[in-house]
Amino acid sequence: QVQLVESGGGLVQAGGSLRLFCAASGSIFSIDAMGWYRQAPGKQRELVETVTSGGRTNYADSVKGRFTISRNSTNNTLYLPMHSLNAEDSAVYYCNCYAVTRPGAASACYWGQGTQVIVSS
Image (cartoon, rainbow, N blue to C red; front, side, top):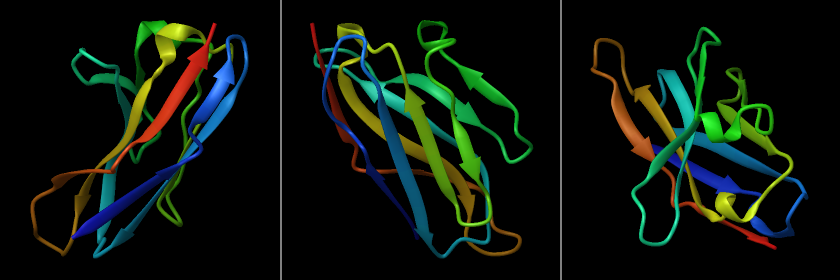
């Protein structure tokens, strides 16, 4: 099993910044993609930004130029500095990864418990 633990959420004023952190642990043989998703009340979970093991990123248009994902593959950690936050960024942010737990096994999807981000206007 793979565990993902997020931190760094909180309350911030509009225009401010936060930095999210995620650490993966457990029976990890390799991790392919890691990323952040978010879910606001009454809405579906949506992609924020992801990064593959090769460094390829994919992000939502709404965060372009404001959020920049980074990953440390040595210790399986993930960061998301967030700038110029606005009320629409308020949500629970979830860390996600596709990991292989042993050689020859298929990649599986894992989720963290989430960290709350509240942006006050």
